[in-house]
Length: 83
Image 1 (cartoon, rainbow, N blue to C red):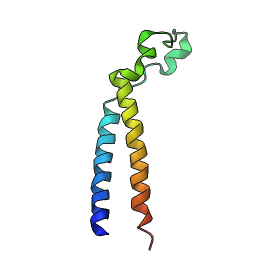
Image 2: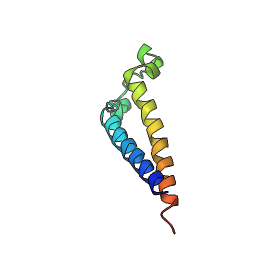
Image 3: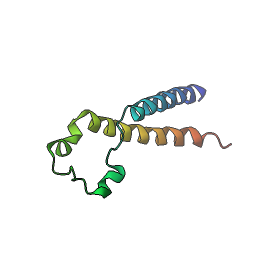
């Protein structure tokens, strides 16, 4: 049982580090309050339609997968802590 917990803890640490790196490598959202000033929406642009295939789209998908793994590993590791 301790071997399984050790393996899960190592996987959890790897997911945490990867999640930190992938979040820090994403670009900030530039729209912010600028969208209130009447700037045109980019929803019709070529880039926004193909955003899922770009580097930024891949980072968003990777973040989603890593967040799900983070919650799953943390829940599994937490189950054994209450004796």
